[in-house]
Length: 183
Image 1 (cartoon, rainbow, N blue to C red):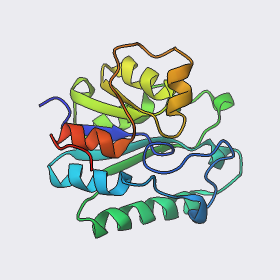
Image 2: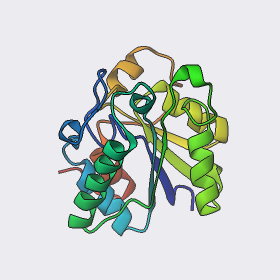
Image 3: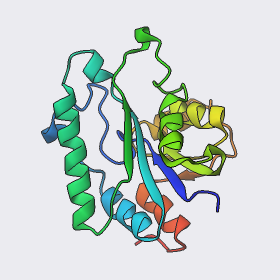
Image 4: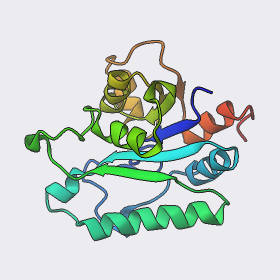
């Protein structure tokens, strides 16, 4: 079934985004409804993963331990709702590092595919930025755009293909995918 593997961007899709970076656990604030949406998708049998650029590490704004604390909190909140995230892949590099993992390059998505022995052409990527779509396009994954985070700005710049499905937020996308009308 296309889409049993869902790859979520983190900042702007799951939690609030900031142009000044999410640098601490206190700054990591879930977007209303996102945790519940992830839990419902998990409960419905979807494999939930996260692919996130975290150049704040490479810039020295925070360390890996701080990032792991954010991801531990995500896992705790999901567990409280009866869900789980199956895998988190992150890129700690800055653009100048010219790594293979920083989106829009496909390395994070390929890491997830390798971990699950999955065909990315059967996956769905949910993002809020042009680089999320570009990474998905390179590997042939389906793409869904949300308006949260940088989503509205990304839609306004006109660089995304016009036929990409757009949802207000992750909760609306999950409700649509699961055949439920948003509350």
